[in-house]
Length: 99
Image 1 (cartoon, rainbow, N blue to C red):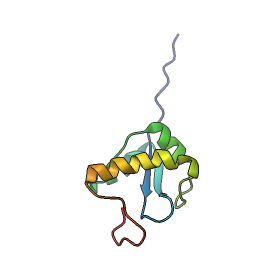
Image 2 (cartoon, helix red, strand yellow):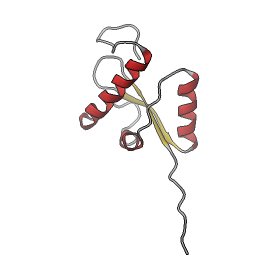
Image 3 (cartoon, rainbow, N blue to C red):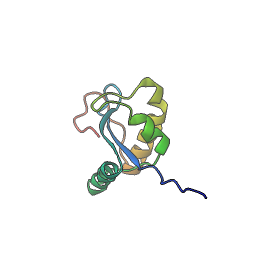
Image 4 (cartoon, rainbow, N blue to C red):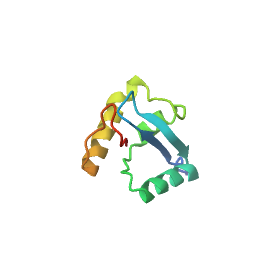
């Protein structure tokens, strides 16, 4: 008899990048918490990028901490995607309107 395994709950991670240092993890969660993070992002017109593997890796980063160097390239690709969608340019150190 085959047992069907439920899909693992979704994972969501929110990042903030202000142009100095590396992006920081500002929210993370699984299941209902992940759903709430996604809902809040949509309500605030924050672009979403679906990448389960990257979300799992980022979810290991403590809240408020910068992402590890090993994830710079993957997160940079996400930031390029976000800035392209929003029609904005990446912030530079000293900008007064961070993402």
